[in-house]
Image (tube, rainbow, N blue to C red; front, side):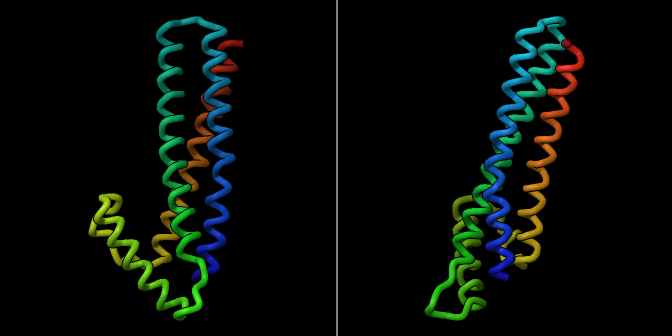
Length: 146
């Protein structure tokens, strides 16, 4: 399990490039909207969509990076106990801390790690999907305003 955690942490850490690309798409889209003003209603709609997508992208990026840091922290080897026992106690401490900080509802405590890792991968896929949507909007703006 710890190897899966390490690998997924590495994958999630690579999501910083997705956020940079998202900001690039956002910036270029806004530049196109400012440069080629046409319909106030259409420009406002595109601007609102761009702002919404970059806000969601940034929020999901924070969540993905947080998950990556947690996975990296939990997958660090320790010499005092076996990895399975260590992972169990760290998972219990993690759940308790997240619940106390209101970062996780109590109903999600004690989930299996395969479910947690699946959730991490789903967040990463959501981040990629948001990036695809951002570039789709950029392409729409480009085609409409050329």
